[in-house]
Length: 74
Image (tube, rainbow, N blue to C red; front, side, top):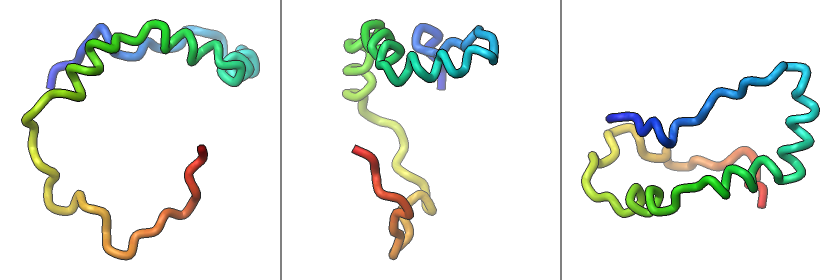
């Protein structure tokens, strides 16, 4: 599998002391809004429309009787 460098996440180059500020920024939605504005939707559509690949391997299925331990957040 080849990596798509255009869509690889970039490392965060900030001081660890900035964590409270970063957390507030994320909760305000600015971080997610800026990420969404840079989205390449054509690339995403091509990815989702691709065919082929390999079927799941033996052992990848969800075990019988499996139950989630936590409820999903909405």
